[in-house]
Image (tube, rainbow, N blue to C red; front, side):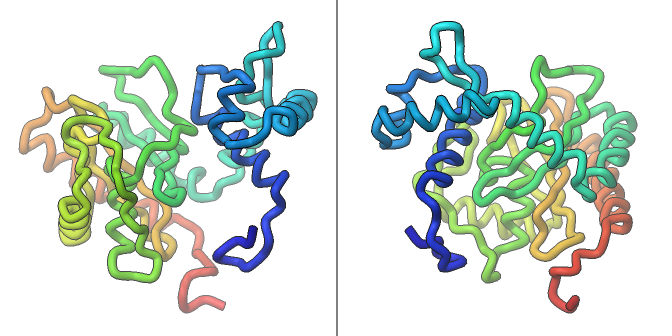
Length: 264
């Protein structure tokens, strides 16, 4: 198989390894049996078993005492931690995220676009409603999240525009699944300067997302999640103004992207 963007032939075993690790990661705390993995990947059990055993030996996959259930291993955590520890943009954004969360007492996120998904790289929870789990490392559909939509709107009408997948699987009754409705929402996002997730990702939460334009096209964004029950028009204006100030502060401090147009 040839990669459509680079023209370089992919290595089948490497591609299968990545597919397996991503599948296990997407299952979170639900271990899988060999049969389930084989069916999901469309791979023969015999070759997949050999691959899994190799990954178990190296710590990328873990198994239970019976050796029949598999989940993501600790090596994946080490690789992910290194990614976070060495990211220059996260290092700059984190203090601003913490300060803004303390100022507003709302939950603030920092994320990065990964094709048609947004990956959460940092979250600072509100002291009023702490989640029982961390969002860091989670990957959610970009088309239903404020951070994702803020970044997709930046790409409208450019060579980097991200095609709207069809069908879109709704996460809540408010998720925009119609292609035309979603495009209009992205156009409004671009005109307004920020995105709004109106209970499209989680029922009861409204989120405001701002693209961080320190590279082109923007790949990172910040957002603020607010319970609908505590949101008034005045509070919404306060949040949007505070988010805009933090967006500008992060952009001013971010390192120059030498790959952007105009730089050699």
